[in-house]
Length: 271
Image (cartoon, rainbow, N blue to C red; front, side, top):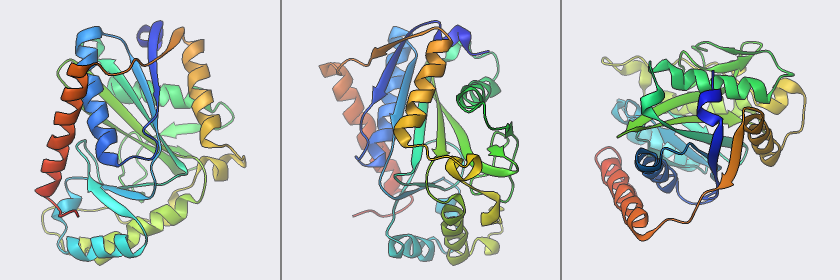
């Protein structure tokens, strides 16, 4: 299913590991502009210090400021992301993978989800990975990835020009249930149950876990990155390093970064 995308050069970006999430989302937007020009698939790995990445619907919670106070008190920061879905937890134990692919090769929107699901399934053949909605998780969706009914990953998509960014978060280390408990408490404090316009998830922390918990392993983030690259090589990918941005690309990235910062100001205030 994915071979047509990865049978040839694939540029790999493994950087921006500690910068602000604004920069990560702007960089993925920039890569979609680039693939519209060069048609070369790109894979990016990224990890961030503790952040809650909110969805647009989260910004409409009845008492959002109370929920944001809880996040801050817990030692996390927050932004509103520019792709679909609801809030998710990022920390040093969560690996994010972005696949930047040409939109022309997508006959249906679900194909992006199918590609990412296949990649992760091949990365972990020792686990029986299933893709279906875990309704009691945070940011539930049709392509939640789980083992034994416990979610460890969620997938989103964003499309710009001729590119598609398929993004996944993988809870690798730590406690998946503790991350879920944080989102449960956030929705409680933000009075999600009082919303008349949108139904927010009723989270059960027992329905989420990390890969290490599910597989009884001790994977590091680097171990999982290497598994992803090995699967891509098995599919025929010729792994190459992503080149340094030229002046035009750097200027475009900086403009996209300004755009996402301005969009965030419409929803929440940041220092």
